[in-house]
Structure formats: C-alpha cells, structure tokens
Length: 136
Image (cartoon, rainbow, N blue to C red; front, side, top):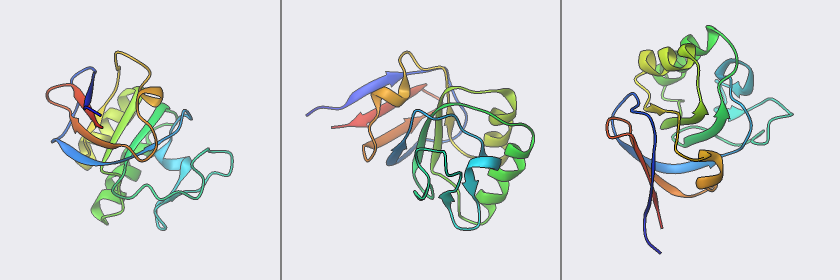
C-alpha cells in the first residue's frame, strides 16, 4: 500500500504523526469529552468510551461555543489532549481554541475527511502545508 495525501485549507500548529480516531459525528470539546478521564463521554456519540488522548481526532463539524477554547487549553496543559484535530467544517471558536492550546488543527478538506481516514490509520498532519498523509 502507498501513502495517500488529502489537501485542506492551511491550518494551525506544527506537524504531528499519530493514530486516527474517526467518527462522522460533530464535535464539542465541552460536551463530548470527559477531560479528566481522557475519553469521549456523551452516550450518544459514536466514540463514547474511547480515549482521545494523543490521537488525531477526525470528526465532522464543530459545535458548541466559547467553552471549547478553554477546554482544549486546559486539556493540553495537563497532557490530556488529542494530538491534532481534523474537522470537515469548523467555527472561529474551535480555531481559537486550537490556537490557544497550541493544538494542530485543520478543516475544509477537499473530500469528507471522516470517510477518507479510517479508525486506527497512522496519519501525519501538516497544517502549514495544508496536507494530511494517510500512511498505508
């Protein structure tokens, strides 16, 4: 198998390689995560019970408000954050939260990113180049 590259809008943060955690669900750091345990906690979320720590989260769209910014920052300060965040569509609050937390972040992909990446794929996110490499 060979690597596949997906392009997106230029993002925020430094390049990172990690394992992907993928769902077509929307995402709120405030309402979907247990920031103390490091797992998805909302029962209706497809990733409920899964650890997000040091994973590249691949989800559909951002939801929620200003609490997302401080949640991402707080999780990063305790070493309980995802390695990166990839969304099909984000809002300014999510981008601000990723920037505040120094969390690699990208959105607006050329294809549905939740369909392009599978759970467990090894992925390299390069926000400055606007690329995601799915290692095969």
